[in-house]
Amino acid sequence: MKFAALLLAVVCGAAGQETGPAAYTLGPDDQIVIRVLDLEEFGASSTATDKPYRIDLRGFVNLPLVGRMKAGGRTIEAFEAELVGKLREFVKEPQVTVMVTEYRSQPISILGQVTSPGVHQLQGRKSLFEVISMAGGLKPEAGYTIKIVRKKEFGAIPLKSAKMDTTGEYSVAEVNVKGIMNAEHPEENLLIQPFDVITVPKAELVYVVGTVQKSGGFTLADREKVTVLQALSMAEGFGPQPADKECKILRKTGNSDREEIPVNLNAILKGKAPDVPMQSEDILFVPASTGKKILARTGEAAIALTTGLLIFRR
Image 1 (cartoon, rainbow, N blue to C red):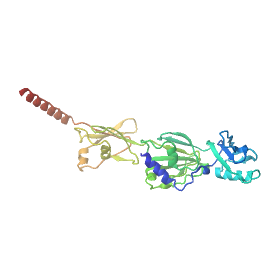
Image 2 (cartoon, helix red, strand yellow):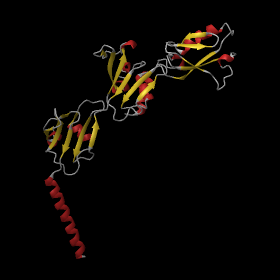
Image 3 (cartoon, rainbow, N blue to C red):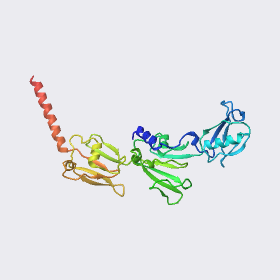
């Protein structure tokens, strides 16, 4: 998945959303620095000795001159405005700047097939793809869906596909990566809430082995199914001397065994048989033709012998 395209989706999906620092909602355990022009109690000198203030677990912070103030649950802009009002008792026109030096109150978990999985902090209003970008973007082997789990206290996920889990404590939804990136379902690039858990599963694979140009596992990406011809195309076609009438699909059964499904690729390629759908974890095996190998080796030996005689006669 191209990261440039992912960034484009982020810009398009987040258009019109307020994401600046002033929109960040303060919370417990965040650390802030406050500067007020002409008030040394608040670092008026703009030096590196600014005193940090930690917001307590109830969302309050103790400040010089004004005492205890509610900060948790308010945006930086709203907190600055209230502080300006309280400081008018000491300065005619207070010029207040509030900066967050440590974000600790709005963790989210981004797990699975991203470059930097783990716990990240929301800093302002962020869309789904913006936080995926914070985690370094999707890995090439990422699947075609992203799962979001949200605590009930932050409201249900605003998507038609969302549902509550069996405990009734979490809202759960899945979004389609391709639908967002192609702008088919921009509403799925939703705003992320604190404590959301975002999981990017690994893409499902099919395998092609044997007499092909490029053996290996191939991701289904945004497709849930692939046919044998599509799988052969991903493997860049046949190798030398394939037994194209004797191919087979090896498919997992309920246990660790695999069943064999005969596939006549020769007939499929000629349009005499329908293409065969494959499932996740299927293996398409293309054997080599023993007869063709023997003929090829006989031909090589004949060429070598003829060449040797010509050289000898000279």
